[in-house]
Length: 349
Ligand SMILES: NC(=O)c1ccc[n+]([C@@H]2O[C@H](COP(=O)([O-])OP(=O)(O)OC[C@H]3O[C@@H](n4cnc5c(N)ncnc54)[C@H](O)[C@@H]3O)[C@@H](O)[C@H]2O)c1
Image (cartoon, rainbow, N blue to C red; front, top):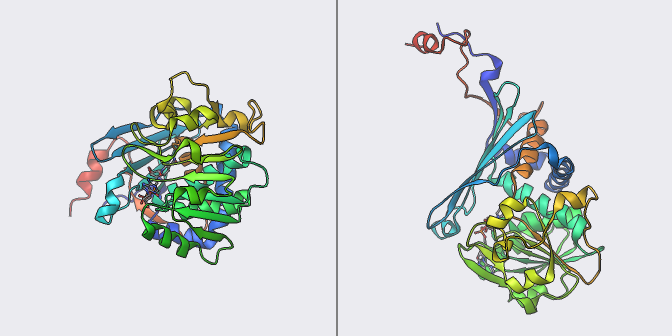
């Protein structure tokens, strides 16, 4: 008879269905608030993490990336793709899954879907950054790009920054229609707009979240007035940007991890030594955030592994004593650790 695997052989697995049940159980705005706090707490201990730019495998149509990090106790990684052409074939631009492991044993502790979790953590990170950088009392956000991430961004800025109005624009009116319908009845004034310029009217925060595998110009210099905060999400690959270079030259730029952002972010358009501020330094008080009401602040977000690590740890805690996971028989774990072959043999019919 085959020996029974030890408890460690079973890895908690959160399927897409269980992630959705977990989010509804907690409430999406509460999840966004709690995730923002987890991510901010990890940014406060930035120096205790292993850091490396993500490992990207590019093709002509997209990118597949691995995003690892560790705090010495736990190790996490995310697999994520970015394929802007996918939506034309009825597929997602971004899909992801991730794993959290115990550094002491190397055994995985959690395997989870991360497509939904990436949208949640990206929105939570954006709003957390805006909490430090956006004009105080900002109420209106322009949301340019109304695809998969858009509603998550809008709800995070409502829950975390107190935004009450979103002005939506997308080159595809169907995306704006979808976004407006999904946001109806959630306590936001939702204003669909016919152009990027119209969306920008009265906005103190501008979020760009478009997908195109090229240097795009979603915002031109004349569209951006003084004093706004720009949350630039969609420029996150070599050759894929959203903002005109002149906007960057007028902005105070804040980034996650410069070594990665200089390759992937809006600042790939600038000299490699252009001065940027690391967001974690603002959070711990080592660097200034917004200093002046007329200043343009820009969060040049590309998404960094520590945000995924925080999200993985959050999910690992949140599923304890809940039905929102299954046990996956994922690790071969023989009774005698050196008898892997014997375990295989004993399992014969
Ligand atoms: N920074 C991060 O941490 C992070 C995380 C997740 C996704 N992203 C990036 O965010 C972007 C959006 O992701 P998504 O999943 O919402 O993609 P999506 O394909 O679902 O939506 C993108 C939307 O942008 C619109 N769009 C394209 N060009 C436009 C233009 N010129 N003006 C206005 N709208 C335009 C499209 O019509 C589409 O509705 C992607 O580029 C993705 O790589 C970044």
